[in-house]
Image (spheres, helix red, strand yellow):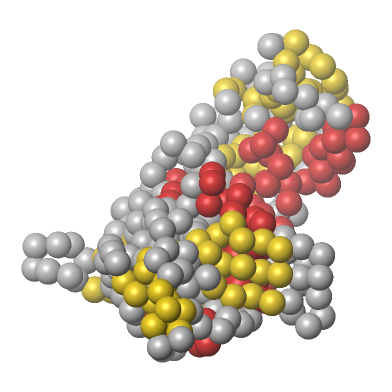
Length: 401
């Protein structure tokens, strides 16, 4: 692979940089260029977290493309200028770490994990790139790693991080339990497309009030909040809502034939910036559902404190930790845990309901309702409603007996 010459007393090597299509390039050996090992290892941790590779583009940006988002999103990582300048001196059109493929796979995940989990000494260790093979070396007093390779990658990404990202911290706007209730109503079916409304938390307007809502077909929750921008949408399986620290959006139309698209930007607490391209949101008439539910005259009222105690007892007894399909039956003065129509456990409960009516629910539908802290109301052949001045929760029972 190499052809060593002795010309003017200087040693040269005939080879090619990894991933470079040009062959037979004569390169003079240079002293090692030491780079910031800590930045590489920290960026590898982030890339492993977001399931991407590390791409250096010719504009000096560092980012990754998540494989499970259809190429419509990008994660921008904190930039180290020295690293970027050096990589572009080797690969002027850009490079990717590690391997030639754009998306992360099992092999590159293992490589990224090795760099991410490396414990560096106080002095940061040593890091350099083999300019002949593109291999990235990281060396400490205990271990040497050289499994990752920089490869040429002229990937052109049109997404740009906005100059200004507005502050947004959901922990300052919502109580933790309110966020958990929203998340409980997001569909967890991984076969659904990531842009489906059922997989996301979305903006809506009810009675001229701004709100966020989530629905999974079986339940719906709305949390009113004036600080949310119109058109906001978030996929919690992709963006951790607890770690969002900033948000902004841009609406654009690429061509006259293409529909408008929304480019959402999330600033995260780990220093990364997530850009996601989403289509216009579907028209789900949340206002109608919520208004109709709140206007129902209840036939049954269950005291929240009483039902909360029942669920606490069930948790302590391990009744909900089984894989058996369970249901909760609420009847006047009684709450039962059911399996295949057989009663597993029974508890007294404060419940005002018609003597002959019984309401069957999945436990997972009642758990977020209990967190709201308000009494649960039922109407025959109508959904259950739990609400206060900030939040409205609506859920359909499995059946009414």
